Length: 176
Ligand code: COA
Image (cartoon, rainbow, N blue to C red; front, side, top):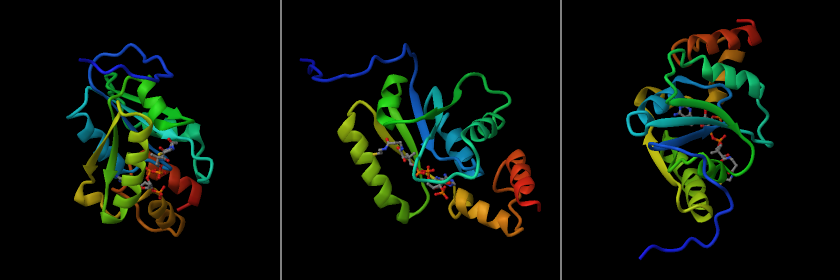
């Protein structure tokens, strides 16, 4: 017997295949994030990289710059990667896009508590969207967008930690 859903506020986009949303602030995108995107594409047919508009986090890069930097990471995009922004509840966005999963990268045990909270809250709001955790690649376990900005600000070497065009942008800002 199929269980009747009591409350479905949104109409889902017409979709085919397994879709995941990979959300984040991406200020800026790092090679650690890209590693998660590439590995997600091994599991899902389409990955929507969604920049979450966070009104409490002061970003270095504007939303347009972040969208552009992420898009530039995929010059040969065959449509399996979509870059977008989300202002509002992530699970509502994921649901309307027809996504069955939200992908998050776990770097260390310290990420776990926060991610567990997010995952459980999202599940409480929308049971049709699962949270899938991927272990961040060992090479990227210690990086975050803030650490990279801080190193760049102080003239340190960030080569190999972010895509070249992001490195260039950071260099221009901090005049390295
Ligand atoms: N490689 C490198 N760095 C990584 C990483 C990886 N694989 N995974 C995470 N990080 C870093 C990020 O660079 C970021 O660093 P920063 O804090 O220095 O900027 C940090 O981990 C946090 O990750 P991020 O993915 O940007 O998460 P967030 O905490 O800023 O945002 C959202 C989390 C977007 C999922 C959450 O705020 C959200 O869902 N917002 C929408 C509104 C909503 O639905 N709220 C209710 C949620 S229950």
